Image (cartoon, rainbow, N blue to C red):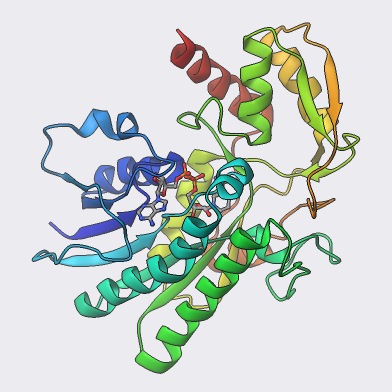
Length: 311
Ligand SMILES: NC(=O)c1ccc[n+]([C@@H]2O[C@H](COP(=O)([O-])OP(=O)(O)OC[C@H]3O[C@@H](n4cnc5c(N)ncnc54)[C@H](O)[C@@H]3O)[C@@H](O)[C@H]2O)c1
């Protein structure tokens, strides 16, 4: 059985990738140090030898005597609350972690896919964001630990491809949401849903006019796997081009949960992007991929999962 190695496989997106690759007939090897992950995300695979889990840093992966076909590098704190709490670990995941996983792919002659991010575009001056845009990142701001780590990760990935001939790909993920996000993870959707379900005020950072685009996790996973199984080396955006202000999102969460929680405003975080929306023409052309789950449907599934977690 061919193997897919997934760093960060105990996290939110990574654990859904594990489920998806096993459903497609692969064996999954997870490398996760549990910095922001949760072993419960993979509890459904306990005792099943199609999923092998190593709780360790992906900078130094184990030697695997297995037929590794794909290496999906998803290990990194991803929520702003997490990467501001773990700045040095975030830089290390992007730098040392990416090299560790690239070396693993090189040893096995496997295809490598980097989970990059829309944050490489920073506070964008081009809207919607197209892959050819170089971005607008403050290299010394607090968010730079994530943004620059991912930009370095893209750079080292392209260097392994160009200099060492490793078969690499780069997916630039835009905001993804769904079950298995941590209730207190700090990102907009889990924050609002948690606050609405527990009768707390919904906190908006800034004046609520900032925009974001939200992709349901099953759509993201489908796009990631299509790119992983392609031969494309250039970055590809995967995200949902539907664009909502943070105020609209809060109102939708309130309506979907039946909550009467008030909205409260807090200062915006430094360098928080004012707009965010993917141009997905490349994903449509090259992967025949586009999102299929409307926001209200995805929110309903996410709210149901959060209710179960709270119970
Ligand atoms: N979820 C999104 O909206 C989004 C958007 C853009 C990019 N991404 C990228 O997708 C990936 C997964 O994001 P997520 O939302 O699932 O985050 P997450 O925090 O839920 O998962 C990240 C996982 O990586 C693990 N990890 C961190 N550092 C590690 C290290 N050095 N070695 C081994 N494991 C390590 C954590 O324990 C966790 O299980 C990240 O690389 C993130 O940058 C996610």
